[in-house]
Image 1 (tube, one colour):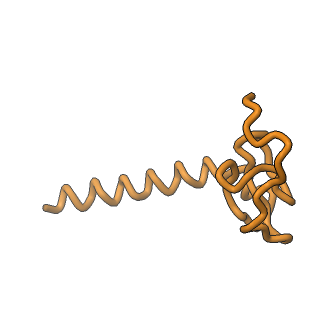
Image 2: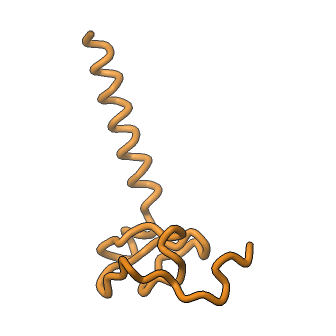
Length: 75
């Protein structure tokens, strides 16, 4: 792990006390976030939603890819 950001306070400019973030540095859901804004994803409504961000991303991308395949086939 690199020492980037070590010793600096987390960027809380987008902090939402009721939200959860997925920390790319620690690989876990956090509230409050413990990493700078560019190293976290969110906010999410729950720790579970934050933990499943990748699954939701993959599902959304597959749906968009399928939509593109249908659109292309109809041309």
